[in-house]
Image (tube, rainbow, N blue to C red):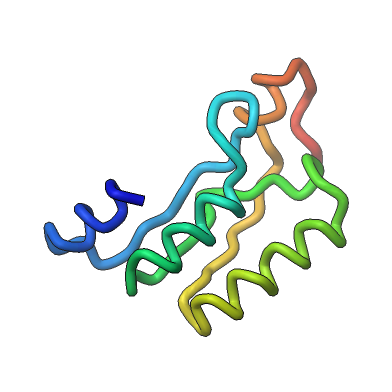
Length: 92
């Protein structure tokens, strides 16, 4: 994660990633890679719970917590943009 390391070296205080799998790669894999490459606090901006099975999301969160204890913030949203990019309405 060259860009994440460069952001940290430039003085960033945290790094949050978007969850929109139709437009970007998987947020959990990206966060795991960033967790290994930096010491930045990490976050989801925002994760869409309806895009994955809840156990998959919970497992991903637990795996990142193992890599970066206490550094992950998880924000969940309705998926207004992410779901629309896949032709679905946001969840309520």
